[in-house]
Length: 211
Image 1: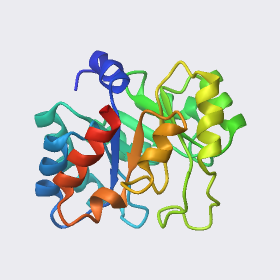
Image 2: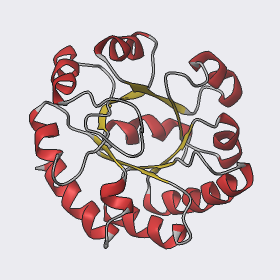
Image 3: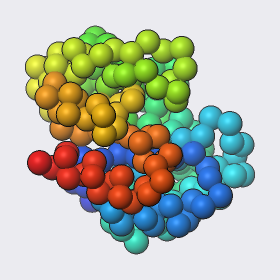
Image 4: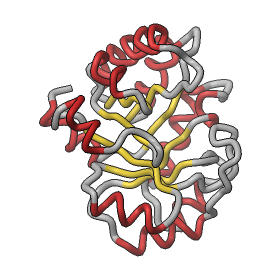
C-alpha cells in the first residue's frame, strides 16, 4: 500500500487480526481478509527470521489483493524487508525513535498499552495507534494480568485523537462488553485463528463491530 494511504486505511479500520506462521497461511489470509479483516499482523514469538520473512511475503500479497494493512510485531528488520505498512511494538520493545530511524516516516507505528498512563503516553509520544489490554485473560499474553473493561472505559473517556483497539480475549463472548465500555475497534487472535470457519468468524465479529 502506498505510504500516503496507510493512515487513511487505519482511520477506518475496525477489525485487526494477529496470526502466527501457519501451514495454510495463504488460504487463511485470503479467507479472513476477504471477509473483512482490516489489518493483519504477523506475530510469532517462536519463529526465526527466514520463516517470518516467508510468511510476511504471503501476507503482503494477500493484503494488497484485499486493500488491507500488513503489520509486523516487534521485528523492525522483518517489517522493513517485507514492506509492511505497520510495525507494532510493546512497552519493552524498540523505542519509537529507533523504529523511525530504521523504517523511515512512511510506516505506521503502533504501541501496546496496559494502563491509563501508558495510553496517555502513547498519545503524547505520537504513536499512530495503540492497543489497550489484555482486557481478558489470554494465552497469547501468559503471565500478564487482565485489565478488565474498566480500562477501556477510562481510555474512551480520554477521547484519544488516534485509533485505539481493545485487545486480549476479545471474541464473540466478550465483544458486547468491549463495545459497551466504549471501544469501537478490536484486535482478535484465537477467536479467528482457532475458529472452525475463520471467514465466518470474521463476518460475525465485523457485523457486531459495525452495528
